[in-house]
Image (cartoon, rainbow, N blue to C red; front, side, top):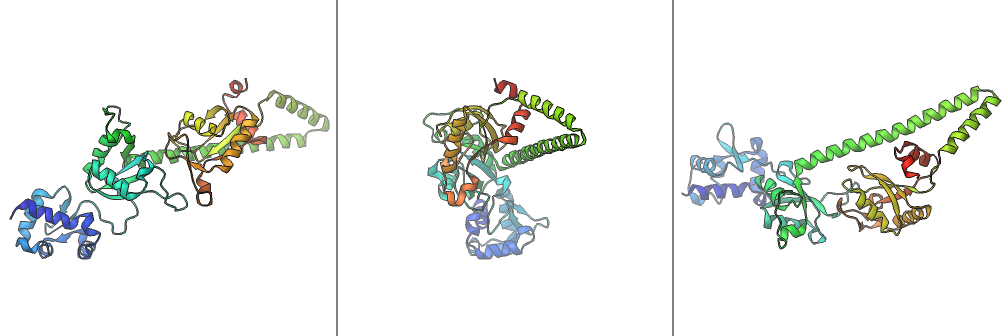
Length: 361
């Protein structure tokens, strides 16, 4: 009997496609140590019987041809998958998966995405379109794709990532026209960890600014209360002089939330200016999903605030400067929001801005 044919039949039994419906194999794997099934049991399966082979012949064939996908147990009596099998799958396996960004609406469901990567790279075992923070699955131009073969992860990145500096593109190449950003799931995990650290640091920084401000105000009030009336008048006069030197344009700063963390300042500017308002300065650090923006005038502040109050948009990617309209009843909280800042919050912004003097000229 041809060893290659035996190995192919064995691998078919352990494949994702077969395990979706083969209850016998599901049970054997779940009951076996480390997901392994005894060779003596496998040779009795329906598609193995016609081969008329014994356990040793099956083991020899697997040892020769199947070690990229299967592993033999320590005692040498059974065999199982290298890639873990999860019956009710809700997430991808990192080592077998990629992150894909920039998919057009033609590829907005699992089947079309699977067909795309199966055509150009290799067999796909699972596609995950992540749910939003409220558990609602909605296509936003990105997803995770899990391959049956681990080698296809690097193949997909090399072949389909249009951000490869050394990639030679053909104008008529279907892959090039897609313009996808592709990275391994492990690399995506690394970037996500870095983003969460940046987000936490930004939050801590803002919290500390407010704490410092409140401490300063409390100290000032204590000094005022302990001073005499003439001294209070002097303090108040001094404070008025200091306040008068802190001149800045009013009602031109907005706080923008839920932007894509990979957005550039140019992308944010274009995104906001589709409201018809003019921007003067974007203060954004990549990796954060919020930023401050200085508008050209108070009228522009009002215009952009009204626009995003009625237009519920999300970005498909970091280069999306138009946004996609979403249903306000289900996704308003994840849409881009714009809020004009004023009063003490506005004063703190200008005091904290290292370019304050430059921006007020």
